Length: 120
Image (cartoon, rainbow, N blue to C red; front, side):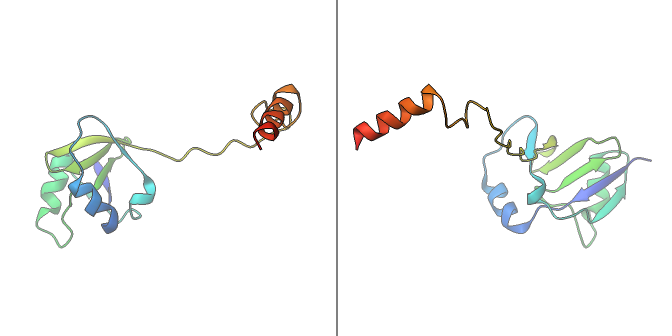
């Protein structure tokens, strides 16, 4: 039988999530908004997992996530479960000598400095 990892949404984030407008389609979720995995539930589907947790001390709440063994991620909303995906922050690109965006030499940079000096 498949198992699902349960990720609980942090309380301060859950309050905003509850009052946000419902959107259709895949939800983007950030790992920082969730507590570490608390439990694993063996169930045939996300709805079966919800039923299993429903009458326990820790029922699934709106905003909680279930992640299947295969990697599928499902967020619990008022309307049921919807697909979700983790959104990880992008790593900042390191500036390297010779990058045009970071180059402080050459005609483009000199022109910018000249224009800035003229406005002062």
